[in-house]
Image (cartoon, rainbow, N blue to C red; front, side, top):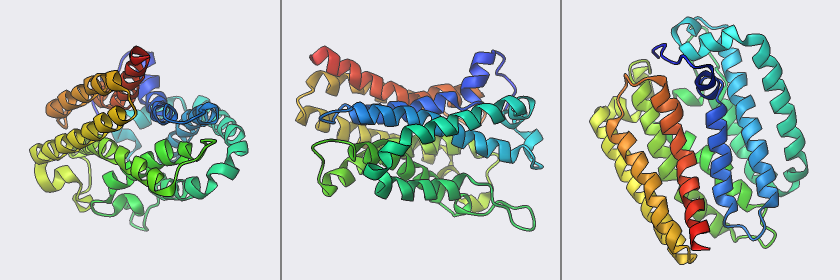
Length: 290
């Protein structure tokens, strides 16, 4: 990553993972729009924000002791702010635990598998030779695993908090509906990481090239947009079925323009921002539709 992030606010948003944590909360809040009563889901969204910040922070703090720390600007930023980040990550993790504790009886059956998968994905296990091992190193699994975990956390879990409840088939269907969007964005991040990813990972850009990866991401975005439009129209949110397309158009433009040498702002703010822009466009449409 090129050292081009000069403003301290952008550094906190990107390297401190505040922005991606906000994206987690936005995705959860999008799901809460369809609940009969969303107060518990909104509490969970705050817990998701704090928990995501803490989870990314633990991962980065674990990696700054490794030999690769000097190669990455985000790890160098964490090294410079090590003491402060230890405090903030600890406080965020504790606050997320407090917020989540009353919700566990409703969500643990869905949330626990996602937590386990996340742990084995983000934890930097290494072999005796210093090579990364674990779920991150399984060929083709990286982007798909990210998409599934995000979708479970942002859709399946908050649906468990609805007072009326949803049939299991509906929960599975709505969760799967979110997968193409997250998978498309994960492929864009694989494009960013192509120069540094181990070829053994066999990510989509490494196998199909950058142009092929962009084409696959665009098809996934088209599928996701179609799902959203049909879903919103079936719920009677006609205005939202139009405004949501602005968010997907933004994502499509970013996909076409993606390349490995883009600066941290492009991926850390704009691409991650798609997960905030689409819920915002839906929310705007719901308000306009009254």
